[in-house]
Length: 381
Image (cartoon, rainbow, N blue to C red; front, side):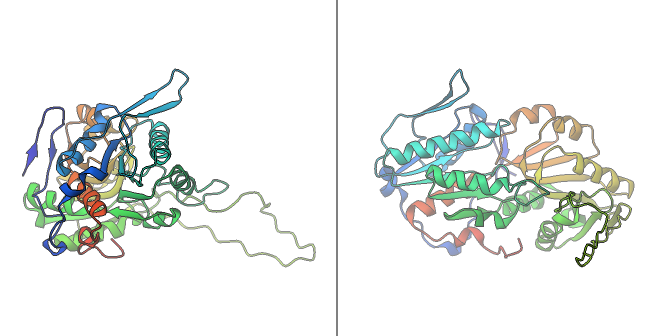
């Protein structure tokens, strides 16, 4: 275990150096020769949101660029870039706070400011892509994630670095290169080093939609998998309710209606009795689904129960709900700041992913291949 606590930074679990970047990547280009063309900005000036940016800057051996980000009295976002970016490669790091819309505007306004200041390129480092859950058409809604992608591209971003998109197909919404990095190597190493007797664990998908993620982790750890499914699953309809349900002939052929699905009782597929249960997903938001899954696993004799996710949104009363639940540990990464939530829930453990983000920035800036960062990651991972 390697826990780091530095002045101004919260305590996080960091992996051994080099695990996420296998040696096959080849020799590194000397980034010192290119520092005069690299500028690293944080699009948010709050201390909690700048923490990840400071870690990335420290790993790259550069200082964060000087900017001023603030809100006018009328709520408008203002950005002041306080150094020249003409002809330089700009990397804007933006972590998402509870005020999601403000964070998006900060990123877009700063990107546009760099473009108008004649920056050579503008790369957004957005560990968590907001609105990524709204990536499918539902009833008469809209695919908001596509709108956000278009907004970022029009603002001037020429490249995007992110981590564990909710759906990998979201990359197709952008007309710029998107590097969808994976946090799984860090979470796997945490399991191997911090969970005693992890060989007796079972990876649990709290719904069939997260079964692929659970299967990927289970195969790498050489453990079994369990899936929870039944009538607790949400089934968002992709239809419209407005044609009347009464069939009319009127000379037109009758249209067949789809038969409604039959919801089975909630059940756990797989053996969890006497096993360490690790519930996995990409996002933990209101935590209700995790807590319900933990209760079901406890009833079936599992224990201890660990919740694991990449992005810790932890909205509303999620920290309190987790603190009072049967879950013994909540393992998340620092793609989203959650220092205030950790004060409310002592079960939260943070895994640092700044290593892979800084390496992605370095490789893009030096023109090196990114394939090393996707070592042993398949199309379904």
